[in-house]
Length: 446
Image (cartoon, rainbow, N blue to C red):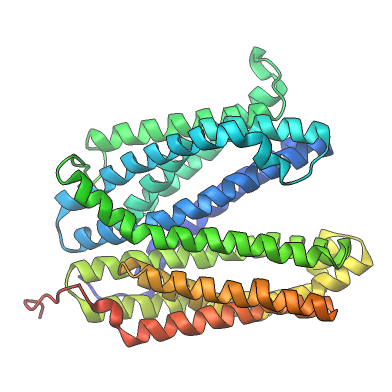
């Protein structure tokens, strides 16, 4: 394979950044439409989106297996097995979506009940969650389809699925919510139904193009060695999925501790997280690029190329996040004042923004290094690091701080400790090169 350059990293990463931002904008558009129906509608959509986001995060962990195996065989120039693992991944994730719907639908009342919404908001959230679960197979299939193509170095095709899917989702969602073109007025359920139909149509269209040879990457039958290959995908993906589940659970517990300090610190943290979500899109996109490039070079038997790919991706991401951190710190008060007028919330948000700014370089290291390890199939170590860090910084330390009655800024500062632990340990693992094990060197390379 050709040596890794900053240009090649950017060529792979920028479409992923745009794709993720596009999906984020769809969520914002849905909330905007719900806002015209009242506060209860916004609360209902927020609840439904939050429940789906937990599933999305866990499934993204499972996708680590797809990235590692498809990228490995693509790098080894074995397009037959790359196509087989991609086809098998889509089949498995479609079945996972059916399983999720089968489990979630009977318990949707209990799931929504966790959030203690008002009666009307609860009712709407239950309906929204029902339709979201119905279309989960299509959404999960879209997710793994995109990851399969990114693993081959094609991040443009996933960008087109995002653009078409989101535009169609917003149009159909609005039409079914407000009763456009003679459709019945369905309220916020129309958002979930319209979005689900749009995503289903989009993934079916792109799968048909793929099956009939419309892309350079060709699918092959998933049936040969179905169980053995499926076991490989699960063995690699499950630790990353459990890592995401533990992370989400730890964050919820942390927010319970934070809620004890009152509405203003809690609101400041929530607004800060929404801003952080935009920044995480960048770090997460570099994580995917790191995993893709490392898996491809290992598949080609190029250990040094794999190491250089992970390191250069981290360095590129680090420069961007340092710049972002400086800008966030410089305009911390302006950002807070733009988001809300409450002076006490602004005070807490400025504190949290300074801490987040310091976290960004560490986040660049953590995401890129963990992505590189996952691309090599080493998903257990990042899982152990996350469990250790979350347990210490998001559960044990906040509990001690709340018991002692320390100022809330120290709870905010646990974010800095969290990313410090994860970035340092994942970098240590990467530099030790233990993840080379199990990947043979191509002795014919010059």
